[in-house]
Picture 1 (cartoon, helix red, strand yellow):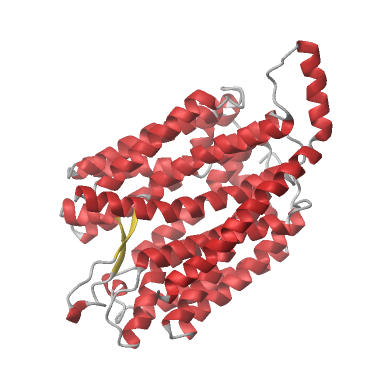
Picture 2 (picture 1 turned 90 degrees about the horizontal axis):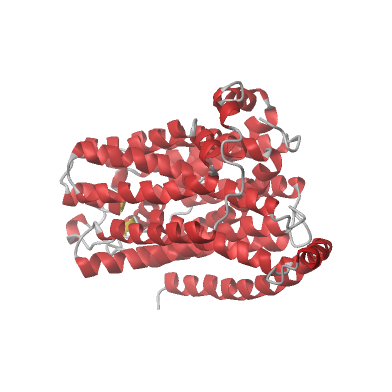
Length: 490
């Protein structure tokens, strides 16, 4: 048994234990924290004789589980398309031809035989589409409702996946435009619907049960990402086609659409904000507010620096591991699937750590300090992947980075939820991701073919990681000045 498998087992054992402890703890916490609300609901039930009305705790778990199931399926549609190219090449080309890719890349390159410039343009099109759509997604959600936009995500992304079955370049570009739009929906309207529905059902203290859902979102994402890679690889091997993951994504999206349609409630009045979205309270007003408000600017830049670094690590860690093997004269490929699962397990473990640091109650101060801490540790971890030359040390440095990612996401989500009023939350969420999309497009344009070769691209890759470390430390300084005014309208 190699040390990668041992590490995965070491990470999974505390995850199982933490899941069990979390379930028992939250059961008691929700019931106690919502005792007064439960009593009020019982009085209402007596008056209207609603004998089927659940207790507050039961309603909370029903709501949370329905959302996490849908969110997990929606994220699975994304993660199923991610893979590691771990084919064993010829001995004299073992390192130089290694490439971190996705099934999207493989399908475009190997199935449709597109050139590298065309593929790069298709990838960039998706991110540009995501950045542009962030400017009007909230207006659509205001007009049609967040539930409807979540349904649109499932339908439109399914069509985007279907476009991968053809080699027509125009259709492929249309598919990437739709995929970029759906990415914005995934990272804005799902979370906005959950927060609005939580408020509608009056579950109580936003610093307890709601904070728990934020942590469980990251845990779910980690578990789904680890499992999706295995399922996708099995499907590709069984069908012998790189289009199989896209068909599986359609299945996940169909299941998510079914659950949304049957069990989700329209948490807000559709059309309520449509006029203000077109008028003075349009996205332009929100953008000006974002630039004028120092707290919003700090949060946006910190999000860009940290989550942009996550994207860079996503493209860099396989090359970094292989580079260590190259210098140690080890020609065999490492178990990329096991390594990826270990990193995702580390991220989930980080989310459980956040859960236990906020057992009593979360707060803006706690979350902002958590982001400062994980940003500084993440910067050190990325520098360690450069300074440490052996394979195992680099692997553990990436595991530490992913633990920090697991701590970061629920902290940032909590801060965003406390900062904005419900009617403007989705719009500001989208605008905050525009710099991140621009950062990602820039990173894609700097990854040349030499960067995909571990013996030639070390300097370029290390420079990117150094820049990310500097940006993360800058994020620490920015968050130290973070002093928000809660519930602003933006």
